[in-house]
Length: 225
Image (cartoon, rainbow, N blue to C red; front, side, top):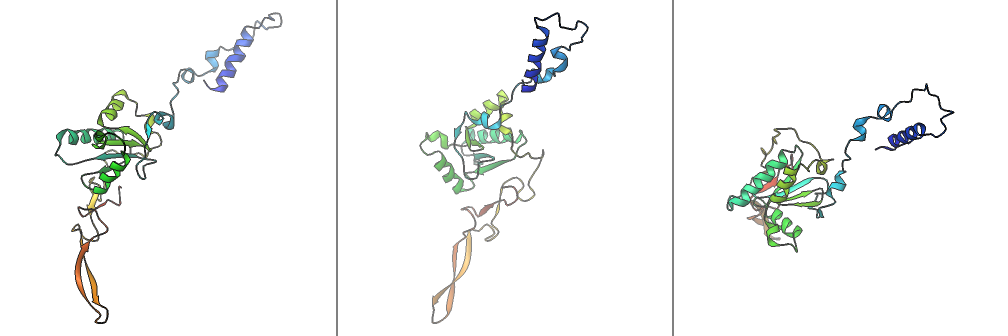
């Protein structure tokens, strides 16, 4: 109940229960409390702020994950249970209509090392995707996420997160979130000229590892990631 409604209630109770009946006006039309207070406001449940809703989860923030949803997944089908769990969590979060950041550890070794560093000191099972983080809080894996979805408790956790249009597909990567490296065209290799002898001012071509992409010759989509 708001402070304004509380004051109105107190004034009504005092005026209706006053012991000085001689000075009261029997013809006065005193409105009831229900007449002056919005019933919807009285019985409206108090919603927790997003920060309060997240207080029950461990503070564990992925890099640049302070104000977004980050999920670590894998698209490899080697372990069917893990692959299906990742798909289930991805679909559940997509159904919430909010923007999220997916980090596929099978597509980028850097994400695998990132998750390993986050889960340092935890059980080895915590390294198995999917792993979900909301605004720098560790939500858990597939079991924890699906339980929250079934209980309908995601509403408070989503406050303040950017929305995404239904059916949106990135025009750059088609939803894959990776693109072939713009520097080496996905080959992971670059040809450079190296001078052998300064006096001769001659050089030879050598093949070096491209420094712009990951081990698969891919870079994150600059549009949606």
